Picture (cartoon, helix red, strand yellow):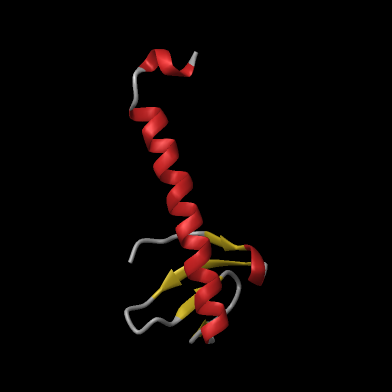
Length: 68
């Protein structure tokens, strides 16, 4: 897994790594298995970030005159 830094507002924490077994490492903490509520918060934050990144890509990959 590539390093990441996903801010999860409801947890006031950054996810910096995740494993195939769904354990996560938060910034400054050890590996742990998130609770159902924490998993939902991480999923929501990831989906929101994905949406923002898709919008960014659409803008950057679009016609240059669109930015004017």
